[in-house]
Length: 327
Image 1 (cartoon, one colour):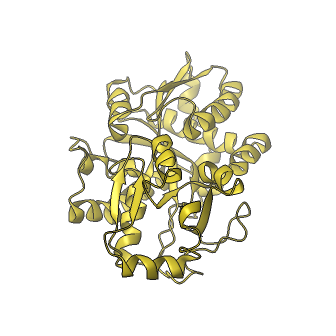
Image 2 (image 1 turned 120 degrees about the vertical axis):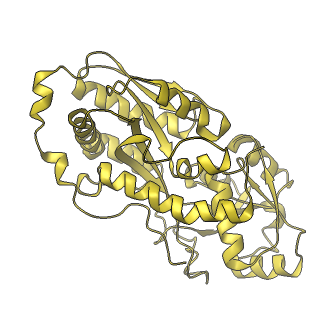
């Protein structure tokens, strides 16, 4: 497998085109509800409020963030599918939305049964170990050597079956032919507690979550899944630099609307989200979290659909081959 680029770079010319059909109808007519499939107060919730505040200013209606966590995102998706396709209910989804129907036996297609709107941001994962194992897992090469010499004796944690951390970890294990014990938790918080308590010895997660613990010396980064080194972790090599040539992955968060949303409303929402991400204050805050933020030229509904379908093709096979099912 070659490195997977999760945000294709090509022009989305429709972002700048006027939409005369909207002149015949007022949009939005009322506040827009933005569903998130995670608990309030987390990273997605924070980004939703930052972007939503800017959108509210330009659209003239508030953006109401509505957290609907649970079932790997299926609860929020079900709420979106029940909503009227008029642009007043949207959802932030992550890349793993593309495999949720397989993991959770959902009766919908990840791209065909929704209206894609825009990408918000993407982010790499950092592989970290805890302070108790920092010496024996001195770098990625030593870690690989140690795990191969002790098959089935190293635990790795994730925030749940079928989630981003789980899929990235399984892909890594497959590429490197490692035998470790996966321990899923109900969210990032419990996973982090387990990592620090040495119930699990390693885990993949975002820079935003890991960085404070790294700075405190409680966690040690071994490698990052981005194409280039991160400015926030300049001394941490990419997996490619560390010798795992085919492992470069970023997860994308994007906006979906219900299937059947009129094309003019879809195009207006795409334009508005792309413009919000170009706003300096919004862009600086998101990039300050370690996120990669697409430009308007890199954004659009076509980009979102392409990403969902590519992720489904690559990781859908992995889910099926490994028999990953939410329990």
